[in-house]
Length: 302
Ligand SMILES: Nc1ncnc2c1ncn2[C@@H]1O[C@H](COP(=O)(O)OP(=O)(O)OP(=O)(O)O)[C@@H](O)[C@H]1O
Ligand SMILES: [Mg+2]
Image 1: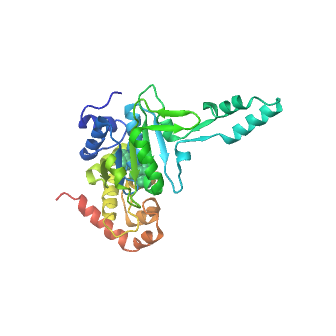
Image 2: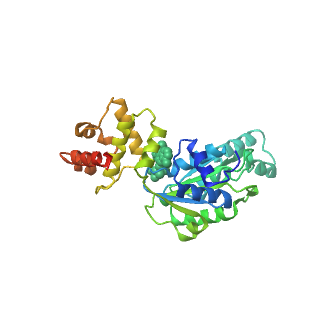
Image 3: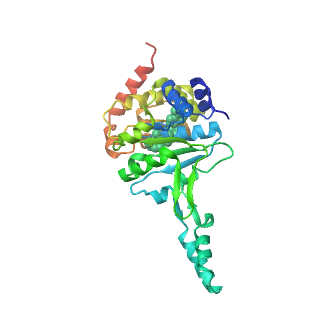
């Protein structure tokens, strides 16, 4: 598919992939595509940061390449590695066969055949469908040296492999960086990107998301579930439920043939929305009923 030519076209394209995208988010997505700038998405867990990269790749019919960040991630796991075991086998085989000429062996060992491409290098390879979507997920989990390295990679989209030469992307990939903000990502990197804070959706949008992701749920139940979760997010919790939890919970309730929420049902299924014992404990007793009553009041026409 060609690039969407308006903000509304972005919303339609993502909507076709089951991704509900508000105007503000659609605007930064549109601009990042149009200007070729990386998109930096920050937000709580389970609000649809990773999912948007998937929806964009599917909507644009591009390959999705994901670099999952973690503590200790280094350049070699992000860009390329040499297949050391295979190289060893090749050396042994050559030795057994009477020993190949040193120079030939060397150039064979450091050829594409023994190169293991990691996400950043993969994202720089040409693709018949156009530049891939490169998702750099949860950047806040890596450390600063890796961030500095990434900054460079993102500025010129080329990698130099000493034994092979420089690989340059014919067309820069569509880059999406996400962070859960467990720490601040460096300004220098942010400056290169278009930034958007992905917030919890409001009631109407969360209903829309539920329609897209759990269409089997009846309207009345969907509304109660969303109203309850929205209320729950205003409580003092260690970990607030994300959209992912809302969807999970609705599916659990469906599996139990629940038609309406009750304090008992909520108590039995809390594990789908709250993942910390302290939070679950807070909702024991009359608390679930109080929040449910508030949620139901929210649903009543004013
Ligand atoms: N706007 C949306 N439209 C449709 N589905 C959504 C939307 N937002 C979230 N979801 C659903 O919520 C799930 C979780 O979203 P996602 O994995 O993208 O969250 P995240 O922000 O990356 O969270 P984390 O920080 O935990 O990785 C997705 O699988 C998707 O089904
Ligand atoms: Mg994610």
